[in-house]
Image (cartoon, rainbow, N blue to C red; front, side):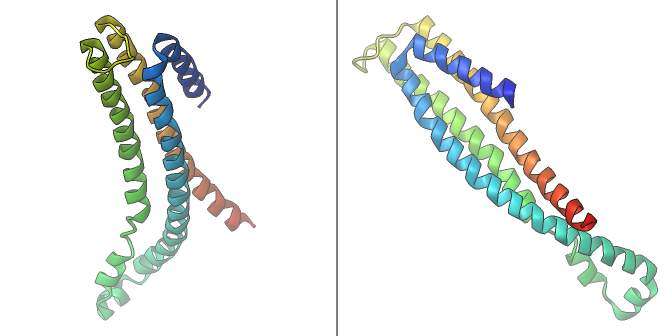
Length: 173
């Protein structure tokens, strides 16, 4: 996390030095990504809490099913036992989080490229930038979003770990 934060800060300083008008595009997207991160991390944490509770019930049920396999077969409970193993809510939320951050990052890169290319070609007034400078700026922009992707992945993993730790602590208590 520290590496990612310092990399983002250093790249942000460099893109403002390079061209502050294009840097505003990246600066506008950063709070939007932060809000999405906060929203999804809360959703993911709640979903993984439910998964941990369900997992405990499934483990107990699985143990009972193994010990009572003859009873399960006799009473035709196989289908109800199989349904208990499908808890996709947490996985779905966690799987949506990273691609949304990825898409937003590349929307920022594409917007920067479009506006910068317009500045190079002279279509957009007020942005004086050359081709090599635009190339440098796009490299900085992708370098800025790489740590954002890493932070998103780490936050998702931390939410899963927090839900697991909460479950362990509740069992200990």
